[in-house]
Length: 106
Length: 121
Image 1 (tube, rainbow over the protein chains, first blue to last red):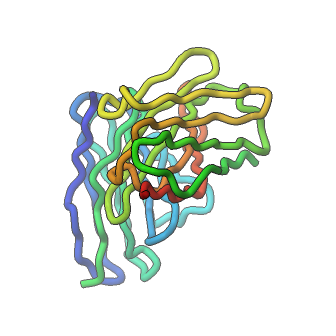
Image 2: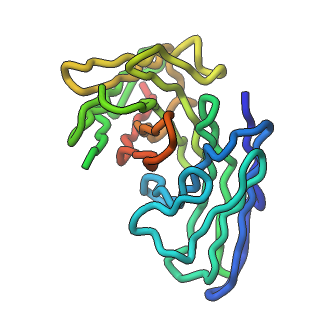
């Protein structure tokens, strides 16, 4: 099974900060990786798919990069609406999720 | 635009079988190259992949759940379903159905809104 390790588990930041979240796969998944944003009581929302493709309607301050085993989600300038929990998901071999990163107000 | 919607009982007794259905609207479940999956999330915890089915082949399940899970498809109703047997309180969670492209990744994953299932007597 492919395991996903996401870091950090919590991130404290201020509005306007540039923040990055990392996801590592236990073996290569090419670019079969998605990033999600989840707010309390809501379903996960797709931000990025295929490692770097921006989902329609998602602000351009979100970007994804990486291939193989290491991936990064970057928010270029954190906005008030971005405080949420973020998950990565590999969908190359079966599927698995990272443990999540809670982005909190500093 | 394709949409997914989960349905099923919100309360299941311990030791019984949890049964959920995902209805695909706005497109055919047989078109394209998609995995049709189930995912769950206990309150306050992370996301757990349960398993998947694809129209041209079979099923794959999370090894931690494989002895209790069955996923099936009904193409005539444009639906796929989840059965989880011998449930306990640990199976209480929001259950999501989802799909993703396995051919070239051109299309983003698609999720339903989720349905809460509580296991309690």
